[in-house]
Image (tube, rainbow, N blue to C red; front, side, top):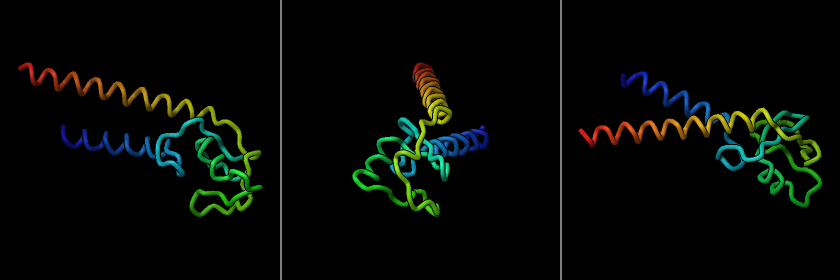
Length: 107
């Protein structure tokens, strides 16, 4: 039904949003988690923000961690796995949608 389809889209958008780097606004790539404030970023994005500075304020809006440095980050394997699952799910959904569209055109 149309309504359940809309709910599925909202759920998918919400899941994707929670897997999105706040710096790049795209799905996390090599996610790292800050041990102090627990915010997650794509490794290269946070590295580029910190660059040659000793530390920066956490780029997550409203965070009080004012001394973020690369040595505070650990690879976030849990988030990496969630991103991988989300990408595979989106690929399956696209394939299914393409198949359904092909069947419509064939009939």
